[in-house]
Picture 1 (cartoon, rainbow, N blue to C red):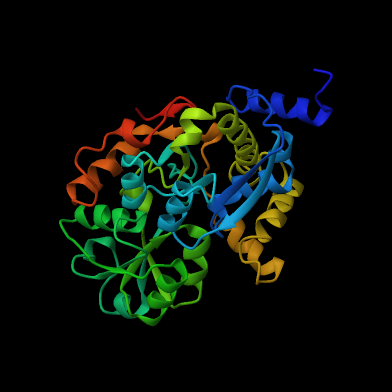
Picture 2: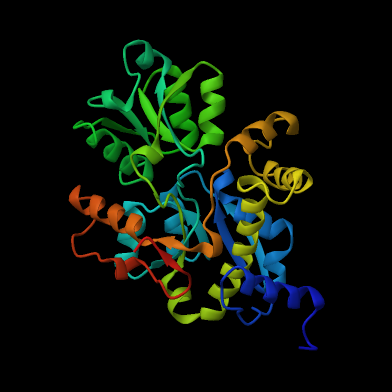
Length: 338
């Protein structure tokens, strides 16, 4: 123990508190962490800014992406080591090829916590799209076919016996622009984006995703299959640091148990990556009001993941032979909702 710094020792204690086995320190391993400029990636932001990655022996760098698919490709090609993003058809197909593995959960819908919103453009709203029951045949924005937006839109519309027309626009920013201009009719997105859009009057909130997909595992933590199967110490070190960031976020932003000063400190960190082009005072409102639960200890909701796989297969977006074991390694974190 004498070879460990006091900070490193505390890091191992923090891993146990987060429900993870304390890993061996990763000996200053350099890792690239895929991220997006969304509050759902706050676990990574906090782990970097507060030195939790460093405590775990990782020299971490964030690499930013505009959609889930290119992040999955980057993990598969080893241009990034870990990522946090939604399950997509592309990720499942890469897993089938032995390239990637999901190793934990990140963002999730939770009853009683304000979650993702279903939006309608102003033009569509005025034309009668005032609830998700009217989504049949409407133009629903997605980044790519097989994305989480595709899954959500289909599941929500199907609950009312409908099916939207899906419009792929590649990037979240492009979807926002199309919704505001009325080029698409509807979309679903996290609250820190949805609420400001609705406040502007350009779009309208017509429902909540959680009403249709309770317990939805919105995003997951994943890595290369080589890391998951052959470098356990590295994966455990990453999950330990990431989970400390998640715990800080939930305490400050969701449970509000850490106090006002802690909440403002976390907002300061997130603002470096989310709405960084806006004044802190303005950005803070959206960041605070858009808080959603991140999975403690990177636990993963197996029932939700299974439903997503079955939907992708029913739509013919991925091979019918893919199983949960094909893309999911449950040996690292707690499994819930089984």
